[in-house]
Image (cartoon, rainbow, N blue to C red; front, side):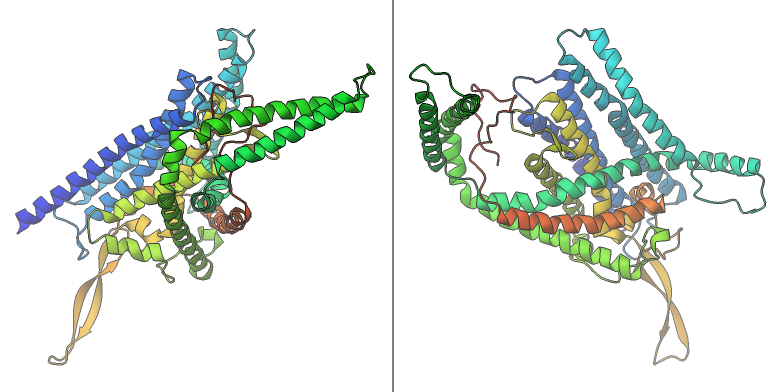
Length: 543
């Protein structure tokens, strides 16, 4: 029996690592396809493409560590609350350190990408727009601008390293003793606090991006699938009518100068505007004709019922997430230890659908880990939909548009930077949806329970398993490394809590706006400022 149990456990461990390996391959393939899909065909650059693929892959691989982290802490214990025979203190510590070093490596690479490599490549291509600039000058200018990001990263690491999480026991200690205590604390944490503070700062920025893009994308994506796009033939008919109307206006203005008299300044300005409008409409006419006769349009038309089904499914998934997030935040508001603790909650007083679903899926390995992976991918796809619909803005100034096959290298780097920050925030979003599961997985621990028997006098003490929570003894339940990174500083947890309420508010507003908006055009809008568009690149509609 013991050999069979050990064999089954080993099989589960092998399956878990195989799933993680398949995830890595799927992540690399997805990043390559996604970046190649959106990058401009005319302005594609090897360095920016590799940078975008690499940074996005690192973010997804980091998020893929979450289900692995949960799996490993759960795998060390039996369902009856006892540790497995091989899971002694040294082995458990080795497993924890392996996951921790994995996070150290990936988070360090993320800091390198965010604060050095992506800014350097971005400023390098910004300087490349000037034809008179040489390669050496481009590199020097890019390094000069990137230096500011490096300074910010260094400041975050220093603040995180020396911010006092614990105070000295002796309140009358001297200043030198206090400084010595901070250095000792830094050495004992092996840099965890410094890295955690820097990553939490980036996660906070990712939270703002998720509030703007992910919350809106969760409503825009399903409703766009359900509503679909306008009919190409109908749009072409409307466009033809607009062309005829503009041509009439041009003829009317030109008729004023038939006798040789010069046109007034107001008429010249109006004529120029009408001629530019006519060029845009004719360009639109050629693209509508291409789309109307395209096999892709006919193929997408055949898939229309499937898109409606997917849209309805995504609406139900979005409502599931929103309800779960609302109940989890309401539970923290009513039963948490308060803002000073980062709204930490001891046990689940209000159950939400996802928090109930994950323990049920734990009985069939590896369904719960597959669900966690699906949730992460759902947040990524909705974030992409939000960025594609909104674009990249700096306050009220629109910087870039994200278009299939037409995204400039700088915009592609911005896109991957935003997605990287949002993916960092998804770990806390999943914690908000299922806090106990993310902290302890499926771990149980033993508690003493007094049992009274009617056929015997007296009471009997019996050990019964209980689900691990924040009240559990530290030596009985192993906390995931993800939780340690996310909740090292209480003020970040408090900010995430209020950010979740903002996320819910933006989702409701975005859902109302998406319902009120009409169908999207079958092609991307052609404006005068679309410098990255050309007639030889016909634009199909975005799905």
